Length: 346
Image 1 (spheres, rainbow, N blue to C red):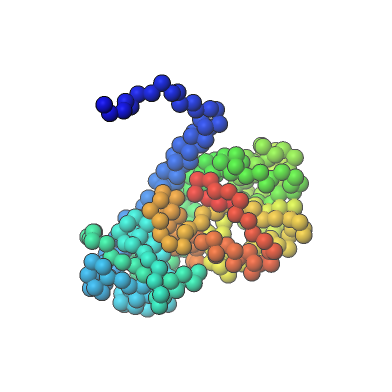
Image 2 (tube, rainbow, N blue to C red):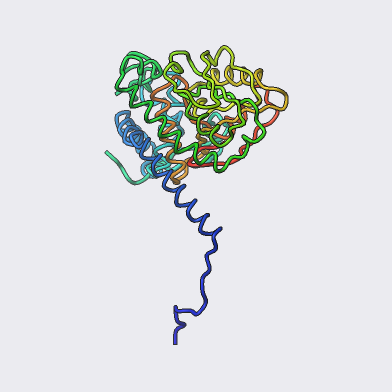
């Protein structure tokens, strides 16, 4: 007789197991919500890849199992843009994270910015602007479409500005709730500066849990003029590329991904000057894997990276290696990756 599936043994799930299960479910839900927020990037990437003839280029390179580097592909699309290889690489990483392409590491192939060598292999599946134009000719898609930088546009479109601010508050509420549950590095901070803090909602949430903190919300004057008053939070106007206020610690959420490495180094060096020897800069940002992964967090990161490429000059989501380089080049003696929540690292 086959063994019975029934058992007299009881499965015991304690409170801690329940809490962990709920946290996992909440994390999955958060990532799903984040994915919806950047979902537009995937069809944009597929459309652009077809318009550039990328799938045909790979197929002609040897059929179903053709192997070409991003630089090889960029050289065949007729681009006059010197940044095309990097832009094509980011486009293809997103497609690879959705299994439309596969990425492998092989010797004697073009290296990316992290000295990681990889090739892109066409999958058997064939799926039949401005992103295309930017790759071929240069420029930023958002600027090409609207005639101004993404940070300038809200000032001429009140409706967009209202929607954008509400979206940022909703995003902050989701992410900061998890950050405050997982990250304990706000203990023993006297003065905290939120660089690029917008309307101050990050600090509102932080000071609600840590009322002992003297918080300074630092952003451009035209931004903070719309900020509300929060207990323990002072709004200060200025330019982070010129200088930042002094404090025990500096906080930056989703700021570095808006800017090029050159701009990030300016900001981080200013932050380094503004804190004492034992001070720290707390960065909350997305981190992309070096090689595409078919995981929700990776898909969200690669979609966000493509959106950064379409909106900001030099904007991008970075790898662990990228963050280490920025930190050391800015004068910081150490960098720690403390925890990950909803696809963001602190």
